[in-house]
Length: 293
Ligand SMILES: Nc1nc2c(ncn2[C@@H]2O[C@H](COP(=O)(O)OP(=O)(O)O)[C@@H](O)[C@H]2O)c(=O)[nH]1
Ligand SMILES: [Mg+2]
Ligand SMILES: [Zn+2]
Image (cartoon, rainbow, N blue to C red; front, side, top):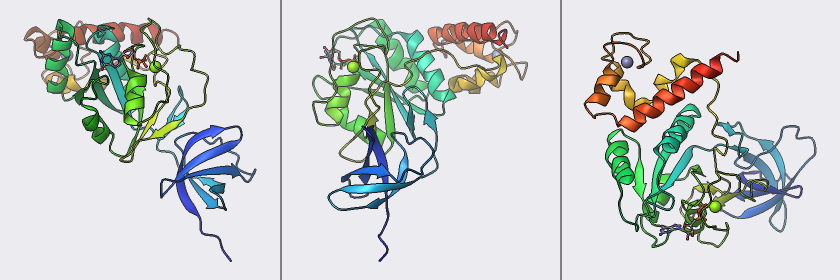
């Protein structure tokens, strides 16, 4: 008799077992046959042989769509960049850097403006004005009053998403709300980014009720820019692309060049000034790193 195999998704690896969500959303406790050489990650899609009592044997890891390193997780396609109206005030520098890292890693960013129950301020106005216009998906959410969370669930739409953003903006609150359980500990505001007490835990995927998963560990806990040539940077600012067509030089860095469409757009307030300033400081950083080759 041949035993039917099933396909599933690895939610976590805990003391030698892999917890795999099967096609009926049951959790199957799997072990490997021992001959599987490759490392199995949370987020891996796998083939397993079901045994009795929701146990199984993991047979094969299916090809990965991608792999994130910190946290180590496979097949992530969305990064939720969480910022708060206030407490802490938004950092547009951090927002632009996270957008860059998302673009570089080919992850779909969704800007989540949490604590929308707090009063507006200039930084929030700038964000609300510019980023949707620049075609970045943005959702206003209040985790405290459970507002905007249904839209967020729908935006994740069956994909695996990581949360990113500074401490205190409400990442754990959002995770708890979307997964309907008291899982991640919430904490008061601190200035550290991603260096909490929980960074050494195993990565776990939490299923959402309408399909889709959230990773419990913040993505992009290291904010260093990847190594790249300076010519690569402008292309990672998708909102500059239409204006860059007006640049005199095809390889314009939008820096010291004359007749630059991007600089003109900044002058006309069509590109947010802080966004351009952040671009320039990232360009300087990329140039600085080039010397290390
Ligand atoms: N006013 C308000 N406070 C919130 C909201 N979401 C989270 N908080 C509070 O912000 C603090 C930090 O939340 P937490 O989820 O631990 O943030 P994390 O560090 O990003 O995981 C906690 O005191 C939360 O109660 C919200 O939508 N509105
Ligand atoms: Mg947290
Ligand atoms: Zn230019």
